[in-house]
Image 1 (spheres, one colour):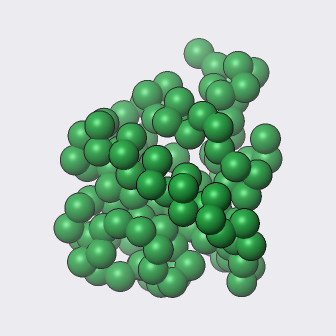
Image 2 (cartoon, rainbow, N blue to C red; image 1 turned 180 degrees about the vertical axis):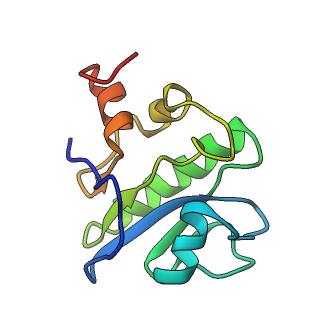
Length: 129
């Protein structure tokens, strides 16, 4: 499983920045703000693809995150020409631990690159607590 860079400052034309948002799309801080400032996220749009960014609602509960991740994984499977760089969604202001979020990405496709901690948890390798 290939991993996403720890810090993402720029993207190639075929890459998409995947970040945690809120349902209202108020991209005021963290990865959401970076997505809006650099990668085409749109204020008021808290779900899906906008520019070179893909928003996943992480502020409406774990069940919603699970549903949003499932939708994202289907979208990624339908777009093999794109490479999706996933940030540690849900592990910042939303307050979840990687152990809670990583399993939602089980069965991820080859064009989705997960953060190191998510990948380690899914592979059961180093970094697993």
